[in-house]
Image (cartoon, rainbow, N blue to C red; front, side, top):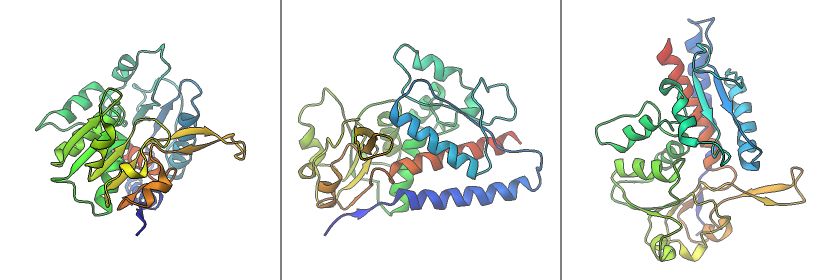
Length: 276
């Protein structure tokens, strides 16, 4: 049977609707207060620009507003995110460390990541994409404890934090990267696959264990003259092939992407409430 398609858009819409309802209820007693979010984009990466447009649209729907400048000392701004990756000439660690811990809604501040890595600690915010991946697993009834999870990619944005979240949920985690040998054989052992390696359609259908859950974080621009923007987005998994063997799989677009944005809004709302 073909795999079940995990509809990230529908799940994210439900989360966003709940946030909007909660926000409207909350501000009834705080008429002069609104949550504010700031997005800083450097460069002209096609995938980053796409996500910023989407985040802007959703933020407006939820009553948020944003400005582009330094926001740490602005009491009207409750969340700051820096769109990653940054151009190579910028020091990513230094930039992220400058974001106020209380406004680090992307969860990339070194203290947040450190707390995520340690048992018994709780980060102020969890990175949005990994958090969204866990929400997708939970909301589709996937049992995590005891499962073999294979992560493709070891980035600070997705690979490392999702591996920590899965460890906290008692999965057995393997991280594959550019120096990993026999990647295909490792993927074949996975009950849960999280693809975040940035390689278009890298994972083939015959790599996937029958019935496995595939979470495709990849968002790769591929030239396509039939599209108005001149390109289309594909994942790190060969979607058509995955549909024939996986138990469930996220599409690209419409899978992890909408969940990332929903988690961003959720984190911002939590920051807003914490400041009241």
